[in-house]
Length: 158
Image 1 (cartoon, rainbow, N blue to C red):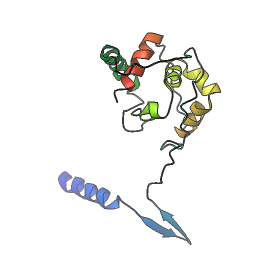
Image 2 (spheres, rainbow, N blue to C red):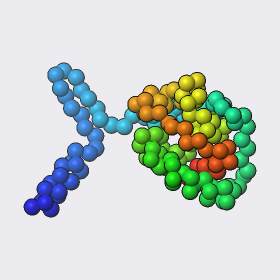
Image 3 (tube, rainbow, N blue to C red):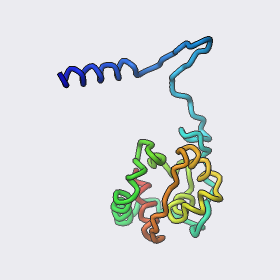
C-alpha cells in the first residue's frame, strides 16, 4: 500500500512540474523561470566585483593556480561550518557558492566570512542578500584570517 501511495505522489509531482499557466478570476499566472540579467544574480541581487565590503580585508590576490593545500584546509572548514546554510550549486538558507567570484570580489567574500555583522549593517550587497534570504543572518564563525583565506581558496574550486 505504501508503495502505491509513494508512486502516486511521485507521479503527481512529475505531472505538476513544467510550464503552467493558470487563469484565476480575470488574470493569468505564468509559472516559468524568469530570465536573469547579466548584472544580477538569480536572487535579483546586483553583481558587484568592485565592492570590497566592510571589514579587515582590503586586498586579496589569487595566484593563477589554485593552492591545493589551502583549498583542502578550506574544504574541511567549509564542510564543518558552512554546509549548514550553503551548498555549492543550490540555494538553501544562504546562497549557492559556486561561481561566487563571478558575482563578488575576493575581498568582499572574505569580509563577509570574517565580519558578517558589520557587512549586514553597512554593505548594500549584504543587506540585499539578507532581504532576499528572508532575514536569515549569517552568523560570525570567528574564523582567523588564515582560515577565511583557506575557505576563499576552496570556493575557487567549486
